[in-house]
Image (cartoon, rainbow, N blue to C red; front, top):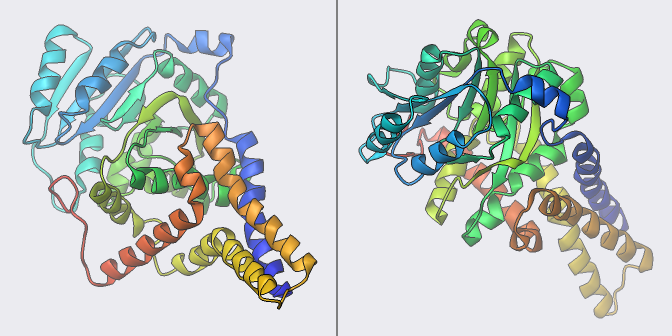
Length: 381
């Protein structure tokens, strides 16, 4: 049991140390007055792919149009919606000339719907800076200017912000915050910034900011035409082409509610999993890291306490190591909950969240072998 306790401590210490270090590097977008003032006049095209977004698109447009940025346009691509999405956008466009609506001409063979919409939007953008936003993202009034400033500060042609994730249902609260746990617990942000290695590609598909010229040099979303996981694949395309990418904390300038029910949460995670952790090369090591750092310490501590209670104690040192391992296993979730305004239910049930998340990765892998694709918004592409 003593050796097992040391193993659990090592597994728990890795994401705890990585999170502690990464939180110092994963900072909010630039707030300094001088760079933000000089950035406020740079024209931005805000590009939104929208398919059946009648519940979200109005609030998204309202938040963007309240921006303090001096020059921008908002272009929405209606991706063959069968609800009121295009009608809502037309209403905004009739009142504000900064809003434009593009209609889909159909989805070509081999393309994912979102990637095709983003590619078409980029081609129609009028400005040299492109902000790709999901339709369920809400921006603060100073968001555009600060994002422009952050991109200039990072000197990367592609940056990605991670908005504050709004979670209401218990399934959202258990699973969605794991986005930050996996990102900060296992990605060395310092090495990501000092290297163009594709293996360090990271981003959030909800918010990408790109320089137009470099975007088209790389191929933009056409380089990942069939992908369903632009959060990883778009930065990887840039890094494959030799360009830098970077990430920042967008908690204080953007918010998003990705999913609104248990079925949506599960389908949403499954549709992205095969291009992330759920592939034959990564799923084994990641399962060991996730379960070893978040579930194993708790299980061993409970077993050790049970043995102690039954008179077969493992010794105070072993129990002490397991207590330390368990505390370390919870540290990333506690730190992220405080920093990113996350719900405490997910923190309390962190081992359950990780166990469930890992199970979904394996389900996604099996579905991949069986060639079963998860439908999303009425499409499997």
